[in-house]
Image 1: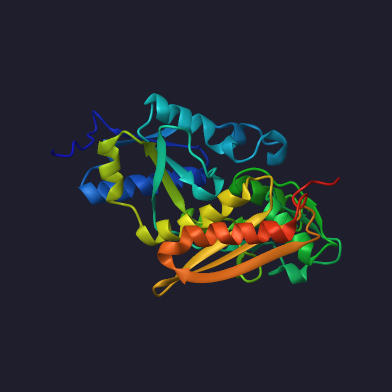
Image 2 (image 1 turned 60 degrees about the horizontal axis):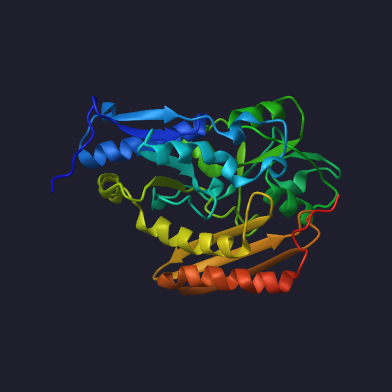
Length: 315
């Protein structure tokens, strides 16, 4: 059967959050689909959807519910047919999708590293004792305090532009952003100093864009297959299996990174106490096809080492 392609009068509707970075990711998806099927961009409609995580900016994510805050409304519109596909930052995605939805398309992964952002300094080691650091990421907070327990960490919610503005206003001496976001926004003017994964292991799936669809939409499935990046999928299969087995969320400091090295896969994982007082890490190498099993096994190993109460919060 011939694939029915979208047209300007019957466009494919792409759902996304409204931040500049989310829109950049939606535009990249549109561009790749248009190129793959030789279509004009008018054959696609970008649909901006307000999500709870963007509407509530005055509280930490752990206080209002974690990762689903950035996906719930978008997934509801996907299930109801208001949109045809949804574009997500994979590090925001829960490991389970609602019934009827599939997440099996990934665009080529960007730079996975975190970036140290400060007007005058270039690395964490340059920070004076007791310096104020801004971040909304529990992972980054725990990793920082594990290495520098003297630092003060304040909440930095908001999109890239909002956080940079807070830095200008001297709310903190430095902050951290994902290199992937800065690259996708072409923000070359930002004084970003990339941090090697050996020094700060990134969030699971950092730098990856995922495209979600309805499981019974064969037409969309065929279109998305044309832009899926296999190596990114292989890496995320290992990382997300690690996260799933840990039952990870925005409320638990977890880091993980899978890298392809020739025909094999290297997987690194880290879990930390929320206050940074303890860090446990592991590394494994194996066949690419065994990535998900490696992720599960590593998670179980770290959970056994951690013992009960490792992720509990203490005020």
